[in-house]
Length: 438
Ligand SMILES: NC(=O)c1ccc[n+]([C@@H]2O[C@H](COP(=O)([O-])OP(=O)(O)OC[C@H]3O[C@@H](n4cnc5c(N)ncnc54)[C@H](O)[C@@H]3O)[C@@H](O)[C@H]2O)c1
Image 1 (spheres, helix red, strand yellow):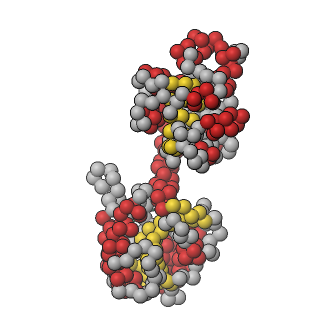
Image 2: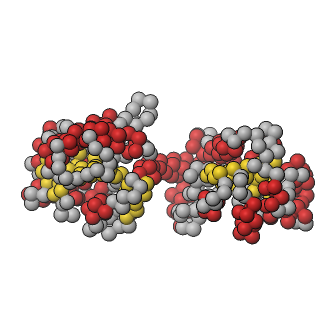
Image 3: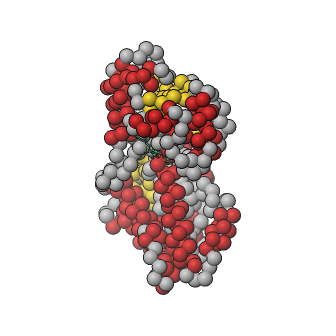
């Protein structure tokens, strides 16, 4: 494949060297003449392991050239990779000026180019940038629409400086964002020699995966550093504690607890965050990151309440009262807080939870229910049908497998706020479905 790489900084140079190594014919393009001259002369403009010989080798073999001439680079290639900088603007948002410029210049060059051309965004851009910003600029400049000899993909780069050549050759996966109905065959072919799974996702999802990956790495670091400081003030070897934490691949280093949804609660998480913060307080350790975990959880309950209230003060049935499915434990349940919020705002409310129902009749939690939430107990009903018969809005927190058929059968005509991401609800034809964050 003949590929032009726009922006020969840390990402672009590695792409140039590694794509040439895969056998592609590559042209590096930049607005900085010194970088172009260095690359054209077979020398890397960046410092990075292995890159010097990769660049020298690619130029010597005639597989890599460099230019500042956009029209020439576009005319001589079938694909343009964009890896220009996307730094922070003064207000913290991302500055997309370089992206806009390069896309417009590629688009203008495409006006005169016969044949088809694909533009691939490798720079890190916020979700929606492709569809809402880049594609309109590209189509306007090229004078034709996506699909008409013009293609656009997001292909975020996940490499880390210092090991970027290794990361390019052995990535965790290749992620491609493509418009609906486009299987990105051309881009898959470019990466065919790399033995890594390829995931094709909607453009916005691909863009967001890169974004949240970096946010997640920062979150992990802030957590480890803050917790490490607190632990070490109590004489703990925090490196050893974290090494062992990572040994749990079922709950700790795993997809567990990484599905966006409703707030957490229960008898352990809120309590232990509070007690960990008390340890920090006791030793005067600043813990701004951990201090904001419980407020973040409250904000989730606020958002959920607003997602319900948006539909007006209509009767609500709430499915799930215990903090999660399969337990009758109501301690610090976010569903109790949501129910109280609804009640306080004058909503007509019915609540159904199979496990709490059992506890209410005979379980050990009966005393707790009568003591702590008598106002909610009065609203509990004995079946999904009873909950739905008088409601217009159904809020599905959790629902057991036994109850699903009855729930789905009686749900028609309801506005459904799904807090759990239940597939059968999404597919239900007779409801007005709203996922919490999907
Ligand atoms: N550095 C990393 O480790 C890394 C890893 C993954 C993703 N990213 C993302 O990749 C993108 C590039 O990062 P970088 O660190 O390589 O940036 P960089 O600043 O090193 O390089 C950007 C290059 O783009 C050039 N440029 C600007 N406008 C141009 C234009 N109109 N035409 C051609 N070239 C132009 C600049 O002269 C510069 O050489 C960013 O979005 C970044 O967030 C970076």
